[in-house]
Image (tube, rainbow, N blue to C red; front, side, top):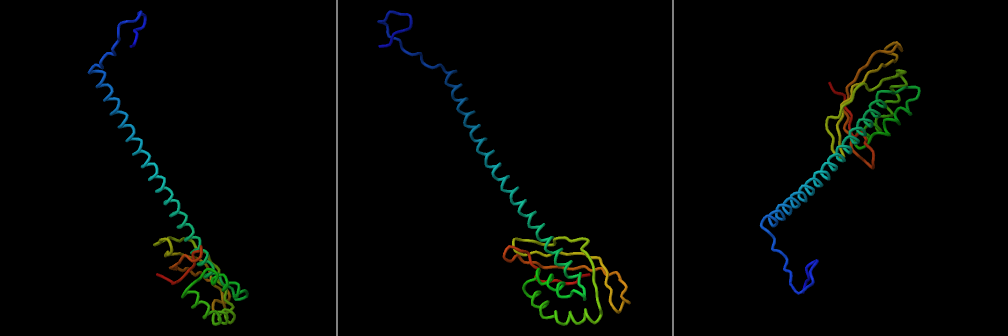
Length: 186
């Protein structure tokens, strides 16, 4: 038996029945709580999705940077060659090469050394522009524009302007982007 506060006892107290307005307030609060919980879940999913997209964008940008750097290094090695230090020049190209390009370059180096020495050829240049045409996780194509000079016995050992456009096809091998093909274009 329950005793009402301030009474001496003897009379039972029954709790009042909830009113309809009290019940409808509880239903509304329950619905609002449920909606807020759903909104939190949707928001969390979007945050996780956005974070994943941002990470993929960072990885893609790093890949573009690595591809451009490797292509620029290889193109500059290819257009900077000196008869008086020919083997070092050839070694720089070979260091960034792989596959068919590496095989072709290795087999032609003896002839290249002879021509360089006979003509006392010196090519100096730099890449002035390079752009990624296509890239995925293990292959890439880059176009590079170069400017430079060549001096040899045919030019009277005077530097003559030589500009080239090169297409480099690269592959990702053991953590490095290497040139698999190099062609002169347009």
